[in-house]
Amino acid sequence: MAQAQPAGPAQQVDANIQAILNQHQQQMQLLQQQHQQAQQQSTRRENREKLDKWLDTQKDKVGICDGSTLKAVRIWIRNINSAVARVPNGANIDQYINSLMVRTAIDDLLEEVEGQLNQALPGQVIPHAQTLQHVNGAFLGPDEANVLKEEVKALRQGQREDLPRYNRRFNKAADYAYPLPRNPADEEMLTDA
Image (cartoon, rainbow, N blue to C red; front, side, top):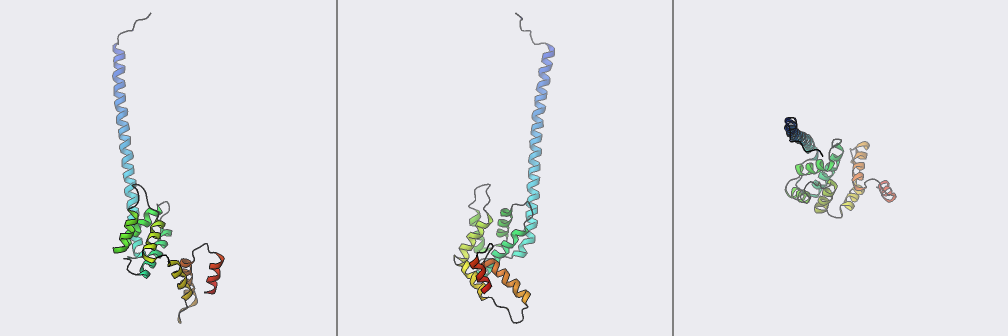
């Protein structure tokens, strides 16, 4: 039976080298974590800068609204909906549009928007359509769809308005009152209007 040999100088050196290697591996892991955190912070900062730049270009297109008149709220909602198509590819549409709503709403309208958005759990983003639906209900009421349809029916070409301009105005109003896809009854209503 072989007896255990006392640790010799070679084994002691190996243990010291292993300890140094372990320490270096820990330091490398820490450096990798710090590098990943720095990259994540940089990405967040770049994304925030892109969002801020986009918001600056969009706020003038949407306009500021305080919610004081039905017409102003309708226009604001239409402009917010139009901004959806201008959100950069790959960006979080809900984050961009919700941020635009906060940036362009003031007074009562801002309180409603923020109240809706503050219901989100940490890390969750409220869908922008849900926020707009809330604003629609709070300011325009349940009869809004009928009001928009009546506006389409009441549209008439102005005395000095050329036909292409009237068609654009009519089509724009019809798109809001009768969103796609339209059912046959809606199509018939539009052709009669």
